[in-house]
Amino acid sequence: MGSAIAATAGSLLAIATILGFLLHFAGDVSQTTYLTQLGLEPTSFPQPVDAKVIHGVYVVASEGSELFKDVPWPKVVTLLLLATGFFVITWAPAKPDTRLRDWLMRRSYWVRQPIVVLSTLIGVAVTGVCAAALLSIASTIPGIAGERFGSAKAARVSDQLRTGSPSKLTEIWRGEHLLGRGEIIITSSEVVAWYDSDQKALRTIKTEGIELRAPLGPPNAVH
Image (cartoon, rainbow, N blue to C red; front, top):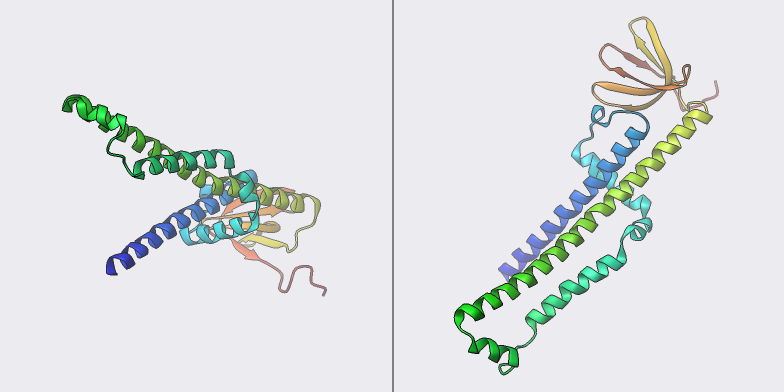
């Protein structure tokens, strides 16, 4: 009973680890694609690991059924059939008087044993290749979803900035000098990226010595 519980707990832990990695991967690819297509350097705006996982959950939830369309189902089915066929053949009940078995038993040890070992290695290799291919496919799907999500978000933000007025203007000051005004896109501990509404361009600036001033109240508030 104890061993069964331990095995179940180990399996659940392994599944949770794999899912966490895939969600982290989806969130990282999405954020990197989004920043890159906006013309920003992704390494200037690092995200914590937990934030990437949460973002990955949002990416997967947003993509929904599109994820299933990205799966190369013919390849997956073929790989599953190959792996299943190997296990079925391996675990099939052996008949003691088959011709192949009798032929092998009549051979000397140095002829029989290499054939048995080679057959086993071929089966293990086929199963390993199938498993590796399935893992590769499973790991690329979140990347594809993240890239598509990040690209769509970047296109949406770019269109909003180009065609409309910023929803809430923020002024960037250094001392008594106004450096610019516009809409904040993203910030980090060292860099601020904002859309300059006067120059109609995306700009970045070091956070050291700057002050952000935003109007009080909701965007487009009526005074």
